[in-house]
Structures are given as C-alpha cells and as structure tokens.
Image (cartoon, rainbow, N blue to C red; front, side, top):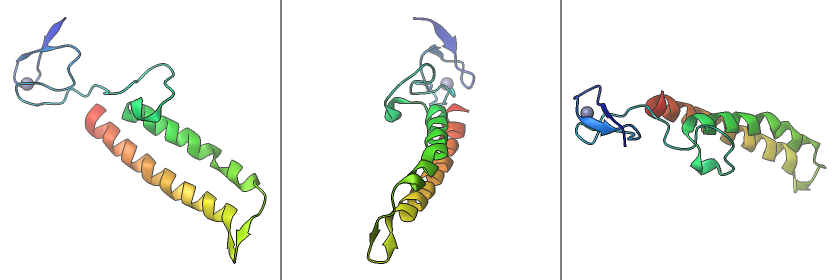
Length: 104
Ligand SMILES: [Zn+2]
C-alpha cells in the first residue's frame, strides 16, 4: 500500500483514502466508479451520475411519442414528460453540486 502526505496536515495516508484520518480533509477523489461502464447508477461517482442524468434527460422527449392517454381531463403523456424534466433538472443540479463539493 502506497502512502502519501496529506496536503493539509502532512499525515501519511494511503493513496486510496478519500479523506485524511488525522484532520478529516477531503482529497477530491471520486468515491464511486469513475471510469469504464458501470450499470448501477448508485455505484457511480457524482461526476458520472451527472453525465448519466444528462443523457437520460436528453432522451426524455421520447416520452412524447407515446399514445395519448388521459385520466379525466389530465393528459398523462405531457404530465409525465414535464415531471421527468423537473425531477431530472433537480437531480442534475444536485449531482453537479455534490460533484464539485466532494470530487472537484
Ligand atoms: Zn490531514
């Protein structure tokens, strides 16, 4: 196991550590899978989550191709599309903020 010095306190820490055990400083390393393909969203680093969310969001207009179905006066397709956009954008903002905070 290789050791390196903490930038903040000089304590010797393993290269793979995400934070210093002595002073608690974060090293800005991705905590999840950050390269290659990984199927499960929750195993990804925030950077990759951000990229995947962006991807899925760009595919969301496909929802508009579904046949029109309505419950009472509510058209399900546009409602589904708009709620996907709202949730997707909120998730983009969150993953971006966490990416910059923990990994940037
Ligand atoms: Zn330290």
